[in-house]
Figure 1 (tube, one colour):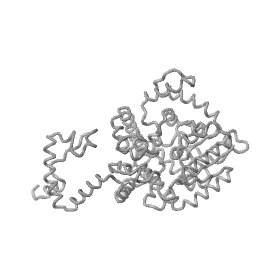
Figure 2 (spheres, helix red, strand yellow):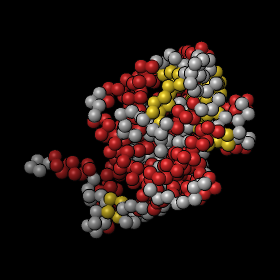
Figure 3 (cartoon, helix red, strand yellow):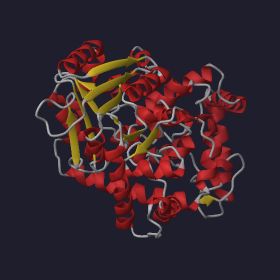
Figure 4 (spheres, helix red, strand yellow):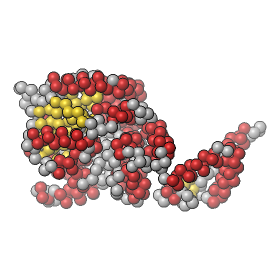
Length: 474
């Protein structure tokens, strides 16, 4: 697949024909949906918590400068340092300098979408520093030389057999020549290999789910414990986070944590929820000697004042993509960007430019499921609709699409003509369906019928059926 958002349509067409990918996505869709429903059913106040969580983030965005300054002061007070970065290049350069200051040759990394956003791994490698991903999903895709396909399940697109092939290709050189096929054995082998890396790393890099202004703490949630070892064993712990991850208090963080895991993986809480506050203190048995927080803006300040501000409430739970029919058909790589699914279709145009990413806001059926499951009440369909309108007004959408829309608008603006045409066309389409109720092929609908049937209309428009029902005696 092509790794650019402008190639979404071609990537999606390719993904729909990939049997392994479709099998992996099918299993993921069933698992995520069922677990989320069970977790929410067990918490009657879940909707109220979501309203509260959204309110907390809105308050933060209204007062972002105040809370960022408070967070910085608290980090300094605990013995750490905060580094402010306007863009990806600045963040990469600061992280490189920090690693070089301890003569780092290898760094371990916890899962971080912000690190993916700034292209950190290839940058470190180009400067003779080896990054080792320690999250199992991230480790798998690092071996495969692929980007994540999901923000919480990076290797969601891989089947067990594909992981077995990857390990067998890479692990013999590390002393593990046997091909394994069982999931538990594969996990055990990866764990044994990664344990060596934790002890050899000169620095550890993690992301942050939340930054707490009250205490200067950073928070990560994991299910593997790799994040803890990444930050405890090396001499230096580097946290990279974007500015909207801030929350005012520990109590606010607790509220957000209650909706995060349930929305993401269907758990009441993740297995590990780790609060980190500064470097180790005198008498501590372990911990880093240095604690650095790299704060990334990368265009987020511009979002604050615009009509897309609501996306900054996102807590990266992945619920929108877990329930999106487009994502679950095409997979994350089809989006050609760091962030995928509905939330990525809103964020990517701001990072890459609407011209380069104009296909993504259109990668939605507008069924509304993404908004319905979002714990932060983000109106994702409205945000994508606004981007569609902006792209159309700027004439960046394909000329053919604009022509068809203009033609449809012209007809729809003339009700008598519209009803007359639909009155002619619907019975014809019903006849052509030959009683099957669907089309395997239809002119101008090849994009749909290549992978699924197109439902046939009932033969009468909604207005005609409604008028018939309202007749006396009907």
